[in-house]
Length: 294
Image 1 (cartoon, helix red, strand yellow):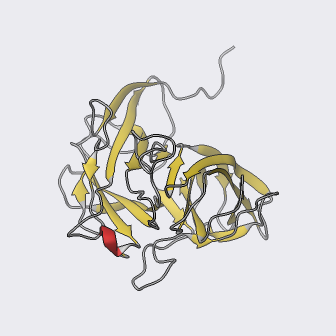
Image 2: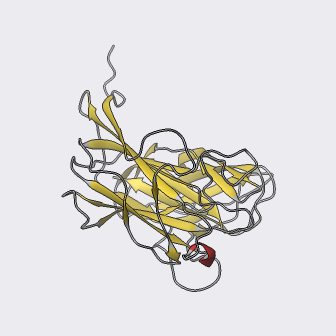
Image 3: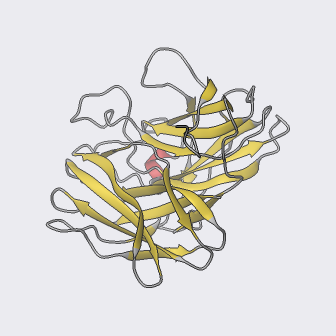
């Protein structure tokens, strides 16, 4: 018996960058201090309509440094560089690399987000980065982080994809010294049990799929696992939409994130909540943001 709603069956995959795995896979992107740096184009224009889009950001982490950071994805549907905001303020702090050993800052696989959102053929994609660490703002740079994307399209049968991504929990980087400038909503993960719910904000659009960002603005992190949850409700996360999203952190101030998306309906007026549990002592200055597709 056929399913009434079948899972996506894409017949095309495109990536901005291909080739052998390396520490520099992707497009280098240079941040500004607590503000977005210069936008860079990432790859060539899409050759087909895309219905699923993944962003991979890596090689930001550096041992002994706090690297709270935000990445925004922009696009030009005409194939040029007249950039329009698309996916805003992705938390990417502590992003590890692709090639290192488990105990190093170059491990972790980077930070990955995946969105079921429609992008028309011919669109060019750009990225810009903000960081709360002046040592990364050139010259000289402590290192260059990299970003690349993947897109899936040509579905075998009609497939749903959203038209926008709403960011909840941050409005972007803020100027000034101190922590919190490139973070989401601050909250405290639990250790022996899951922590308390923290309110990220209220939905003003209908949402059907989710991603979640998390990082800690801490220059001395531990090696542990973090399970993050998102929930919807009026005063707490009464109905879960993300449960057990796993982050891996390392002693070299590194973090790795696997991609979603997670599915669940969110209605206008509902509050979005986050909580987490850490397999050890919690790192300092942790924050989160949610990204809803509708």
